[in-house]
Length: 487
Image 1: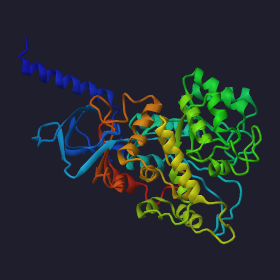
Image 2: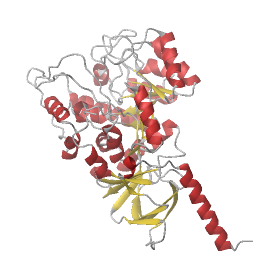
Image 3: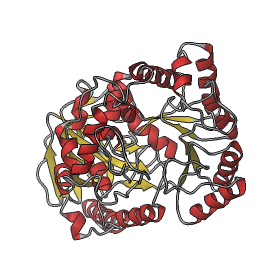
């Protein structure tokens, strides 16, 4: 019989070998961005923001082993040991990896856009398979939903390459092609011809590995209902950026999630006709839905009753509000020259394009409705809708979404929970990721500073752990400087 100490050592070695066997080998292309790769890692004397909404806990050691969080201990100096990397993180915080719930792998391009906001058709949507995954990972996003694909095979192949360790990037929940009706804004979208087409589309792409679907602005109720029914047979969820179908109608049809907060609900729009998008696309409804009024209360209660989540996408609307802060330098550096030019054109509104309505009021109203929804027990998710529009860029936009949730009235730890644990819960991955708990994947973000007291510190990402591997945020950003918007 083995002595107890030798037995424990043997078990430790066997466990380590098994864990290593489960992790994919990394290509040289991925290895050069990995800063921490050890059998065992100790994040020493770090502040823990655990993703549950509880207050941060000071001075803890977070132990990572075999790609998992193996322990969270009282802070202590750990002696150097073979196979163990110790990081002294006094003054740093660690939070769960962001779970981005309205993220994309493409850029919206308007050919020959000029300072007068004129461009030539068609609007095109080039794929960002190189820059976007690196930007997400650099910004602290370890899991993301693609929330509508224009090159679905590219997204599926990208997911496989990331999972196999061939390319850097977050865990992907690949959404199928947009479920859209006639009159789409984007030439690359298939236009459904009816409920049968919706069912066939869902089944075709589910057979090929997509794990979610997104309905779009011109879908009919019959098509949406058919898509939801077919997707649910496959245990796949459906979200929607709607217009032709109201939030109330979609909830009653069984939709799982609604995108863009309360910006695109059209139920009160004066010109709303069944199965048709209204002219204001929801602005009128948002303007006239008092967050403390009976209509808002009824809608929120209906959504909560039907277990419909809401995805907040505040950054994509921020740019339309006059006087908001410009992009920080690091964001501009990530963008291609053409993307920077497009952003500056869009930020400097020409005299020929006057404001309609009050964007600042609509922005505040949506924030209020999102708060009411969360207070009523609704599952609020977070994602910035990063397609370059309004200067919203992958990774950076996810950080900005957290900051804007705090502006909306959530505490920093509540905002971080919305951006981490809530997304994991919606995806059914709450046992694997979304919070800092022993046994979960080591999907963690190391931040210089304390975002619980200065939420802007969420931008100061230094290391991003995904499945226990610590990626160097700055190296990832440097690799895509000037590329987002190009490829």
